[in-house]
Length: 267
Length: 199
Image (cartoon, rainbow over all chains, first blue to last red; front, side, top):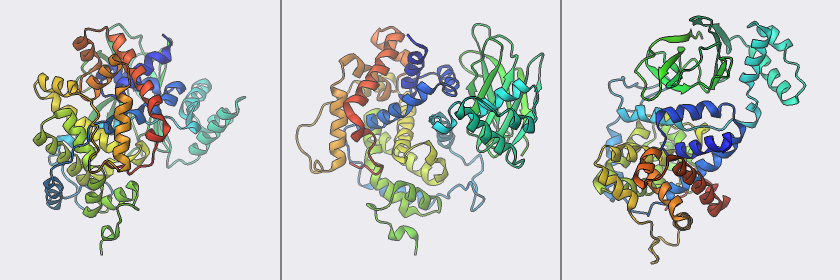
């Protein structure tokens, strides 16, 4: 079986909602770089919606709409833009948290313009240059491949706006070191020289919200040199810090045991 | 006059309805319910079986949407896909808390096509529903079983493997092959149609 087929099977399982947490983490990490899987993703997602419509149509009870409308008339809306009331965390339903998790679980295919990921290209160039200088990054942008050159130019353009891009050296243990960058609605976390994974362990990325809530979000695929890059669609509004930790496979703890890499992000 | 008062359900896109919802227009929620309430309820009934619990699932989905309409993000896909995913998620979560026999009953319920034309049979979306069920019914039995157990039964791949006494790898393969074949059977006209389908 090809590598793609293996992950395509995970993709189908994820679309059906039938993966366990560790498989989902593995899949999310793989999707950051696999063009084949990204090509297959929209088709599987459409098929899943079709499955939903396959349920035998059953009219809901006539009073259900009225019940819902009456209920919402007494329910304030939460606000995410500063207007109106904002429900406290205590008022939030468990289901709202589930919705947020669902939104994270809905995988968005990489756009064509982002393939060969601009962040990955940027990360590679930063690592090659051995520095985190954005000016240097722009000079290193020359690339024999047109798409990569274009992407590099996009990154260089981003870098010119210091209000939207920050990079942060992170605290780390041992020889491990890394970088976190946020900009243009994306975050990239890069780590180098992570310790080799032992059987039964996995790397886990943790995000801390500005409110202090901690969430394990994704796993890392680490190459033979212990290098890894993770890209996600997050901004400073979503997270204030990230960390990578080594955890036993299976159920995750509520917080990282021993973070190997961590970074506080500044807006 | 509230914007919602001039909305016409057949001319307003889901994206616009969500925008109105985000501005606090409850009429928009009612219109979204008109469009997707039956689909959500049907899906919930298929998974949890119990009418009362199915109502609770749909009620929670729409009140959650009202409470935080920003939770739908257009860049994550069509609204119809999202709200049905939400309903599926909630229904599966509910059923996983029930006795396992309920889940088995849901998954083993027949996917038969009703040959009798119903009062709404003429509607385009009901035809779509029939097409999907026919496409699902045309899958090889083992592939269909794997998909139905996972999606409508709420079982994980490992649970499906245990239930069907089948190696996990085979179950994964059946699910992928079944999904691909289902997509082929349905064709792009059914899968990629414009938003706003209703029963």
